[in-house]
Image 1 (cartoon, helix red, strand yellow):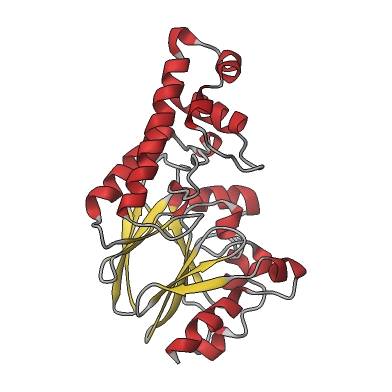
Image 2 (cartoon, helix red, strand yellow):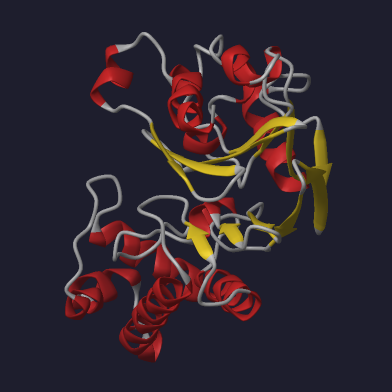
Length: 281
């Protein structure tokens, strides 16, 4: 049965859309009970065991349409869905999973922002929200869900699997050798990202498996490298912002160019520079 789990979990999130065929969801087993699923959208962690199934993030809605095969894995549907933050590539499947019986869990600010977008009573909204942290005792694991304020957004949470020595960082950690998306308009900040990463680094060890919000699986060393990159970007930005330089002046100076990074089409260097400027200003 264990050999079938990755395929069965993967099929949970696949739909009949050509989109899913072009961007198939793949699963990697990290421990006896924890898997990570890669596809279109944020990385998903799945806990599978005698108590049932719960997942962390659920990607886009059309990648969660077909959930019938979860019955092949465990009777019924996912018990819980934990959202690391409110962005659609991590919460887009909330409605589908909720209608199938899952209880969505997220920070209070995620509930607030999803309510603003979808309205009171929507199945996209968490049914359980929390302030600082909570623990989910399920599948012989004690998952500690911890909120870090003003990081990628104002509602980000990191999930620590204590027994399995795994941590899911959501979009606080972009593992592409590039800079993070600091969503200033949603309460995100560069300093908050650095503070959260520092705190996680203190709590994990060299054997910890680190699941980023996007990108391949990492570890403590990879997270430390990412932290140095974000700090370097902050330093060069602050240097360019001296003497009360305007955003236009900083964009013209192009301080991030010295880092030699590649940028995604949806997050070009000009946008990263602008968001870092707004945050550090």
